[in-house]
Image (cartoon, rainbow, N blue to C red; front, side, top):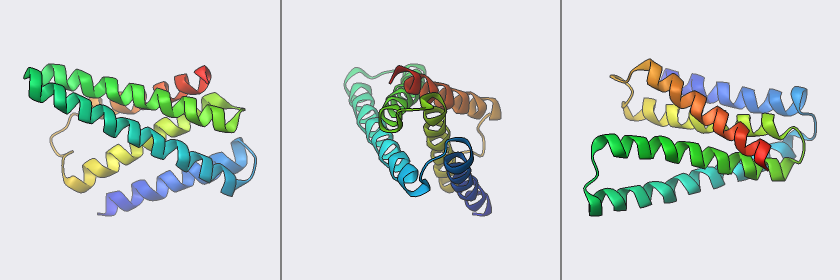
Length: 144
């Protein structure tokens, strides 16, 4: 529980300082735009995971194929989130996209910590997930 609180405080600190120091602008407006893009990113993830679960059910996919599908979903969702935040913010889109990727990863990490699903996980895989989320979010920001 303590780790969850630290992760949440860290995420809010990133949002606040990124919005004020590095990116300028109205903090309240920036947080609203970030929330819109983040919600859209999670909705896209949910829809894509439903499609993957349907494919798993119908095609009896192997675990390795499902794992690759999950990584692809993380990447596509963050690219979409980066594009959305880039269109909303209109400047410094790379940084905004990377911020969306970082927030996406922090939520994944928080959910994993809360559900106890991170105990036996390789920390290298967690770092890979973080890099995929941040890089794809930045790529989406550039593409916007």
